[in-house]
Length: 129
Image 1 (tube, helix red, strand yellow):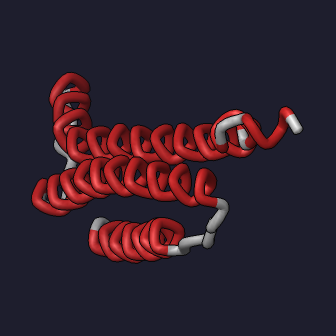
Image 2: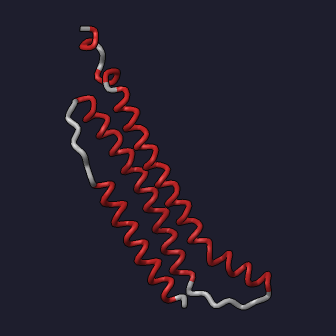
Image 3: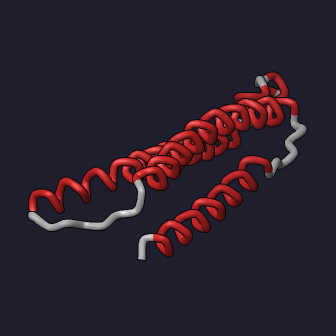
């Protein structure tokens, strides 16, 4: 009888904590993608500085590729963070209302983004040979 008096958040405490852990995993992923984007964007500058220090001339592809990819990765990471928060709040409400329905939008976005980044990197590496 006492169990019925508890609020939905108290009854579903473990489910809410699992939802929060999932949200934090998405946030870590988005931060990682943004950090990787920053590294990609700055990598061509680093290689030019190292080659100057070593006194060797290094032929690199245009900085535009790495800049475009890096900026795209940072934007993707930021977008993923926002979408993760929206998903977290939606699932939290569904848990409280006991109407949970899985959503694949964020998962599909991540898979398509990773595929697109992989294709872009393959093209970039082919052009740099």
